[in-house]
Length: 190
Image (cartoon, rainbow, N blue to C red; front, top):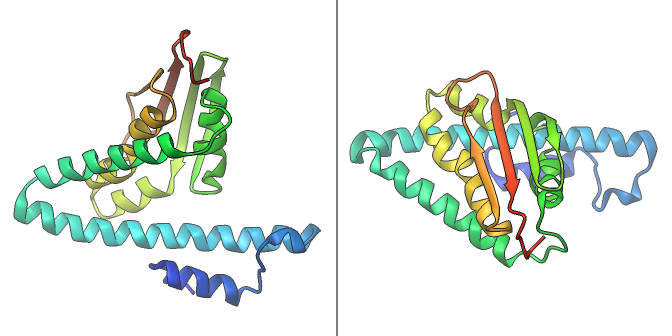
């Protein structure tokens, strides 16, 4: 159960733990234990998947150059943008950024909200499973293209009036990521 690199491995491991879906059938301590086991498996799965990406794309960059990562980054942004544009969401404001992007991160990221208002959101990210996995393979550039680029497409698709900036990333070796979201006052999608 330590080698969860594929979705199939994850699902087999989840069945092995005895967790049932939906977990509403479980209550109290049993539900908490099941959620904890599934979260740990999810983290192992994501680390394994990141390791595979790192190894493969290091070879591709070595053979074809860094333009490969430009294509990956563009694709990541475009996929996120389209996915969020098509998502059936009741709200497309900064609360939605927290609800749709950050709250579901369950153990993959650790962050604090530094400032929050209707027009401004600033997060301080101190741990990231993706950054840890990619940097372990000296593949921060690959991680930026696959994982960090997603944030830009997410905001473009959620609400084009959200301006997203980030000046530091764990992926690049900084001590934290600083995510800032500013919602334009004329937003019609909020």
